[in-house]
Amino acid sequence: MNSADIGHIKAFLLDLQDKICAALAGEDGGGDFKQDLWTRSEGGGGRTRVLRQGKVFEQAGVNFSHISGARLPASATAHRPELAGRTFQALGVSLVVHPENPYIPTSHANVRFFIAEKPDAEPVWWFGGGFDLTPFYGFRADAVHWHQTAHDLCRPFGDDVYPRYKTWCDDYFFLKHRNEARGIGGLFFDDLNTPDFARAYAFTRAVGKGYLDAYLPIVRRRKALRWGQRERQFQLYRRGRYVEFNLVWDRGTQFGLHSGGRTESILMSLPPQARWEYDYQPEPDSPEAALYRDFLPARDWLSQGER
Image (cartoon, rainbow, N blue to C red; front, side, top):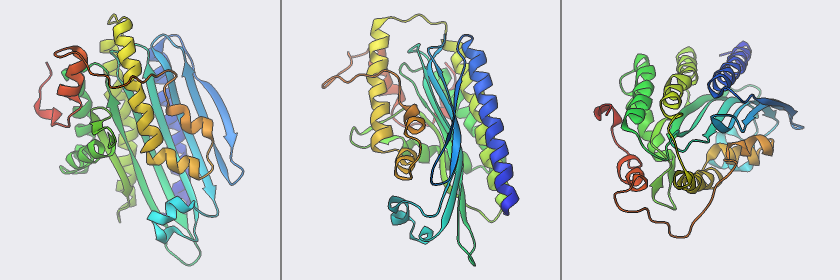
């Protein structure tokens, strides 16, 4: 790779942010994204866009950032000592969509690139990203569609890619302190650094572009379903799990906060409302119990069929 590649990656990410925002606003049909441009004193900045109180989406945030610095935080170099003494750049688009209707799942996606350099040494670089789905009320057709879309975009890059990154996603988006998955997974990859830079970049682009194909059909299927206070209260309770994961376990949140990122943009991923309830237990054989029984345990969704 060379310095021109970083410019190409940045242009792709900015265009991806534009396209996702346009598609989400179009699907919402009422709200639009407010944009904040920000700079970081240590180097770089970003473009944060948030849609609030739309017709479909209670909150949707789509962030672009490109930050740089003379050194990485100690939390990063502790895990990757080869990065010590290097300057770095990190570019990415990250998004979280929190619909109002409890029958529409929350979704998350990101694609990112990282490079660390020092004179007279080869750069250390990698791509990362993925997308995952967090339903409150499960529908098998939605889960199969989500994973089939993920499988199909991975297929040109090798038959082992989807199962490997699907398993990584199941393992990553898991609340260890609850012994419970956050949702039904999708794709997650990190540290993607192969001799073929172009292929790694092409896969990352495919993941970024595939998000809308995976998510919007689910939104269209579910947005007209009627819901009431029971569904809303369960949605808010399960959103609490989303908050717990992002604040306790998510590496992206931790890197952003430790590296001096913009706090408002980093914590944009949190839902606008959530709640906690002591020792909540769903009623047996209820739709809420079905989420825990039939959807949160990791499984091979491609073999389930759409029913």
